[in-house]
Length: 168
Image (cartoon, rainbow, N blue to C red; front, side):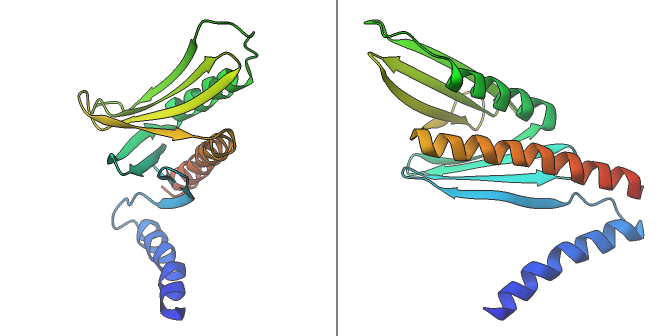
């Protein structure tokens, strides 16, 4: 156990030392959150190149989506607005969406809030490319945790990017 903890503490220092020595520009990864949800796992990593990685795994599949800080910020902001939006009780189903995609791969993550007669269903959909993907339903509590982790990932990626820019 102590060896694992030492390795976990030393690895980031080695990456920073290499980056600081100017031998090679290395992208620093920092895990922001790993969330074990009822129906799967979501992990958020902040990168020093202005991106965050959103990883998801369920029994239906696994995906890792690289998002720019800008795209991740837009996604969290629009998702927060969708969650906060008060929907009048109606017989019709209403669906609200937000979406973030990777720049070049077609991979992405979308969020949908389905409202039917006062009941809410929250669903993420993770797409590995233009054709394949899988859903991940979350509770209201889990949704709040995911959004907070994404916001923290955006802040952390900005910090890491600023530190990497000043080092060069």
